[in-house]
Image (cartoon, rainbow, N blue to C red; front, side, top):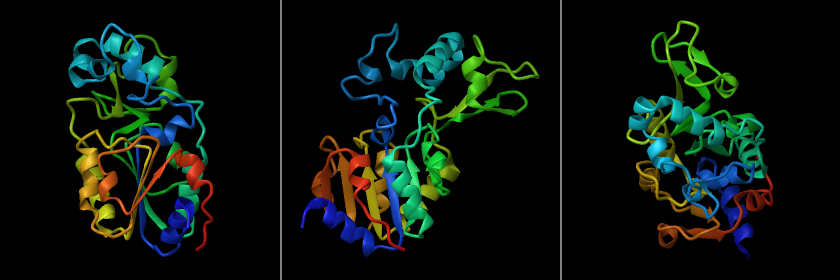
Length: 241
C-alpha cells in the first residue's frame, strides 16, 4: 500500500477530520510564502518583511507599511487550487469538520469551505480604527498612501501582525475542533510559526498525517508522512460520504 492509499484508507475510516494548513497550501495558487528560497524573507527591501509586518512598524510608518502590503500581500486574482477544492468537497459530504489556516487569502472560503478558522485573519477584511466600518481588499489595493474611511479614520487590515495576539474566539474554536477530531491532516506548513504550530498538541487521536514538501519537526510523531505537493496529493483522494 503506497502513501496515498494509506491516506485514502485513513480518510475513509474517519468521520471528524480537521485540516490544519499553512503557506504551502496557497503557493500552488501563485501566492508566495515567507520562508521558501524565493519567498518574502529572501527578497530585498529596506526592512525585513517581519519588521514591516509588525504592529510597531504599522503604527510608526503606515505609508511604508501599505506600500509593501499592496505590493506583496494582496493577490486578489488568485484562485483556489486542488487542495482547497478537495477540502471543500470533504466538508460537503460531512467528513471534514473544520479547516484551520494560517493563510490570510480567503481561498478556502472561495473554494466552498464553510467552517474555516483564520488564525491570522484575512486581507479581504479591513476596518476603520475610528468608526469600525469594514472595507474590502479592492478598496485597499486601489487607494493611495494610508487608506482612509469615509469618516476620515485610518483603515487597518484585519490580519494579525507580528507583536499582535491571535483572536481568542478563533483560537478557542480551532482548539475545540482539533481536540474533537478523529483525524488531523497537516499540510503545507513548516510548523515553525507559534502559537499556531502549538495547536496540534491538542490532537490526541491516532491518525495524524503530515503532508509537506520539506521535513518538519513533527515528522517523527506523525502516523503518516507524505513528502510532496499538497494539491497534487489531495487531488488523488476519492471522496465518499
